[in-house]
Image (cartoon, rainbow, N blue to C red; front, side, top):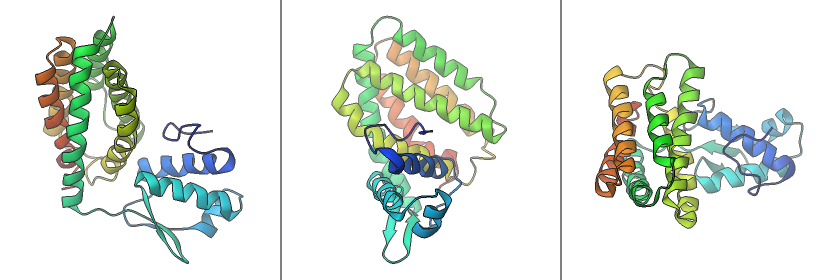
Amino acid sequence: MRTRGVRPSDLAGKAGEIAGVLEHRLVSGKYRFGETLSIYTLAEQFDASRQPVAAAVVYLRSIGYLEVIPQVGCRVVSPSAQEVIDFYRMYSKVESVISGLAAQRHEGNEAAQLVDLAERLAASPFQTDQERWTYGEGVTEFHKLTGAMARSVTLVGRISSLRRISRFYLWQGKSVRNPDPDTTEYMNRSRLQIAHAIAERDSDAAERLTEDHIRANPGWVGIV
């Protein structure tokens, strides 16, 4: 079964299956920053030759999950705290543009759906691993909806990998299993504010709130 992260057009056949499973392991935190993975061991796990495993690894490296180590295999990236901060600073700029466009271009009941989703996320329990994973899926849906509302296929396509890496970094965080209630409440409240700004077609507020929200991510999960 292909996981959500790997699109059917990215990789075909066995390589696509392997990439999907590996990405799920990376994003869910099963593989940690700096962990070394053996191509031979992975081939045994997936009952596959090294070729599709290597293709999957190269693909995941292109997104930013892995780095290749000659004669060894690959290693999960291990960015410094400053690199994570820099990433979210850059990512927040692009995501804020999407929110601003969504505020200008949403149609029908899209904005109401976005507000409803933000409210459901704010009310979601955040105690077990499954609840946290479900919450993460909901956040992904929130960004997908803002992307659809922005009506900029090229821009949303460009930011796809950044969104995947953002979720990956979040699940690598030290406190994702025991987040501070105050910061979790802030993230939920600010997401609601973004949704309402978009619904009210206040593009300036939507952009400002989104940038602040995204840049708070590293601190929320204790990466920095």
